[in-house]
Amino acid sequence: MIRKYLPRHDRLRQKLTYMGISAVITLAFSTQLLAEQKSEIFLTLALSLKRGFEVNPALQVLNEKVESEKTLIRSQYWLDNPRFGLMRENMGPTNTLMISQEIRFPMKYFYSGSLQSTKVQEKEFEYKEKKLALRKEIITTYYNLNVAKKILDLLRAQKETLREIARIAESRYGAGLTPQQDEMKAHSEQSQIESELLMAEQEVDTEEFRLRPVLALENSSILKIATEELSTPKLPKFKNSNEDLALLIVKYSPAIKKFQKNLEKMEHEKTLALLNYFPDFMISYKKPFGSNADSQAYSVSVEMQIPLWFFMKQTAEVSSASHLVLEAEKELYGMQLEQQNEVSSLAAKVQRRFQLIGLYESGIIPQALGTLNSSRSAYRAGKANFIELLDSERSYYGTQIASYRTLAEYVSMLTELEEKVGVSLSSLPFLE
Image (cartoon, rainbow, N blue to C red):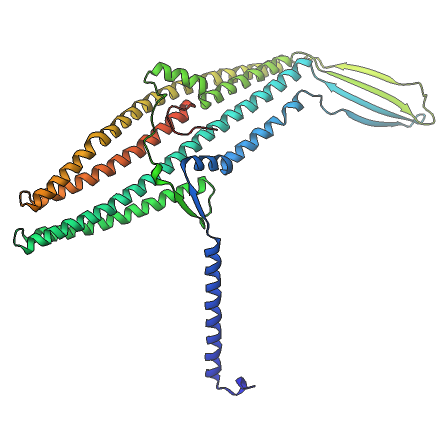
């Protein structure tokens, strides 16, 4: 009753206050719910692959297609549905029950089942091809994310190094040993490293967002990667011989196997077209019933389909199937040549990247670190100028960053090589 006699602007102010408090409470409650919904997901490379193979939507779709084709195999070996009919004749009157069954030439059932089995095998190789492509995507993205985080850590360390160099320049300038330009240059380098840090953080976010949909991870989850396991995959099973790689392609490549099954499928189609020259059969049974029907009367008939118009129908079907076989043979041959060329090129690149990583680890990075330490000591002693010190600092961190990027390229090429060959060539985890 008191609110009734308040001035209008006071009542409005009181209403807005209540609305504001309600909005704050609602916002706080929603924020708490969102915080509770966030869950941490810790992933290693092996766990990432396991999760990807289990939950990736595209891979699951192909798996269902394989299962769908498998369920059709048995149906191809079996008869088609029989026909039931009922006929009534006015003369009599008489009712007749009719049952008929079409029976194809027996070899057609065998080849129809073989054709469906070949389709299943083709889908299975397509599934394996997709699984290898998914493996490549997961491993490459996982390493790219790790490399991006390593580079971010290096840039942060470089930032601290530049701070130390700036302090040295300031102290030497205060003592009158160096010009002010050294101090200004140091601060300029610090500003530049800040922009590089922003780009590195963006790269980390980009790689993480690439990994999430592959592993079917919600954006609300917090992703943690085991960065300490980042290592250079070894090549214990790798052989340089192109002949060996060509044999591996023919034996294991799912892409080649898929085209081989396609050729086999076309050959079955051609055989079925040839079997159309042979007759199919129709068996019928008729039985009259009713008060006017003879209880002992029935009739059985056998009909045979004669390919009388073979010169118009069957010949054209066989000719078309023959062309499809030739087409499948040429596609298989073209795919083999393409795969062999791509694999040979990738193998050479993988070997070069592997050797380059070894050079970085054994020589280039230790030499750059030694040069940086020497330049620091020389600059403190007044035996080197500031530009030489900055060049040594850039060279050391730039070399480390280049080694990590080379590692990411190496892993990407190696997994692509294993994807095309279809067999493990390295110490990286393979298909289960």
